[in-house]
Amino acid sequence: MSGFLRVGKIVNTHGLKGEMKVISLTDDPKRFDELEYVIIDGEEKKLLGCKYQKDRVIVRIEGVDTIEQAETYKTKIIEIPRENAIELEEDCYFIADLVQCFVYDTNGKELGKIDEVIQTKSNDVYWIKSPKELLIPVILDVVLDIDIDNKKITIKPVGEWQDED
Image (cartoon, rainbow, N blue to C red):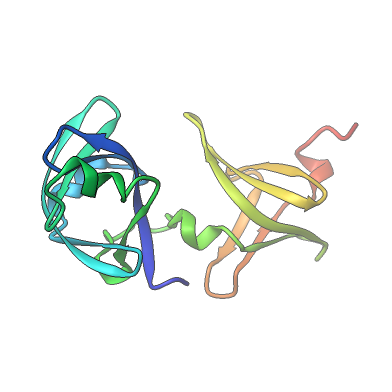
């Protein structure tokens, strides 16, 4: 497990005084209200404030006072130390911990590792890109066990939940 969790991606500047538009990478964008500092490029930066605009968070970081300074942060990822993460409910996991887990079926067959977690309205979907592309719906009838410590997820055999072509 990584010592940091991604909470946002800076996508643009906002105004002339160094504010930046951020796409939130958390389930609750209001999470930014509770942060005193963030990590950008491995450096701790004090978060001076944030406000919300439609689907974006507007942040102000100490030492960034002009649009030109803010411009240098475009495309950068905002992280927080894992110990500052929110407490998850039982059977809930951070996406960062799920990605790179290996998926096996109950017969012991390795299906690949999770490359991405796609979030949909009804349920998440684990996307394995190789050796064979596979989209796994994260529902109780399919995903049987998640062992983050051993990076192992166990699912029902594919033929039992997916129509094979």
